[in-house]
Image 1 (tube, rainbow, N blue to C red):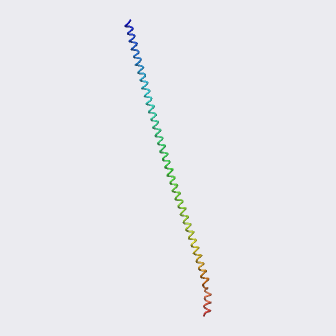
Image 2 (cartoon, rainbow, N blue to C red):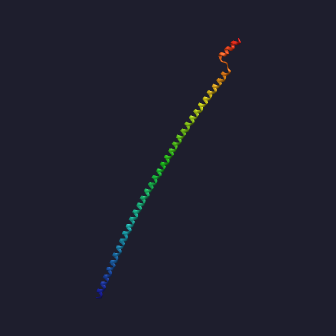
Image 3 (spheres, one colour):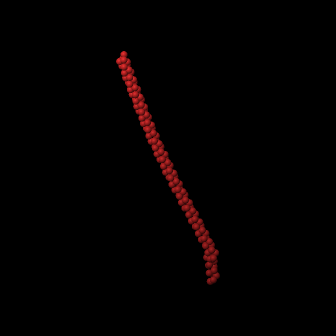
Length: 137
């Protein structure tokens, strides 16, 4: 009976040891699976983060390019505006110069008329000169 009881006890201990071993393997497998899942989740999150960074960089580049295009357009419009303004100022100077030349021409014509009138007022006409010469002779 004692041997029977010892065998039962040994059997019981052996079964308990197997049960703990199985439980340990199960726990280890669960841990391994959890670690694997965690590793996969981490990889997926890193992949998503990398994608987000890539998209963010692309967006930043697009915005930068757009800003550069706007700046170039602004500079081009400013250049055109200055060109138009310079042409307008050139045209105004030409018109002003033409007006001044016209005024000078009119003034010269007026001086010539006045001179002519003064000369005519001081100089006897041809007929008067002939009459005067005739009277003297």
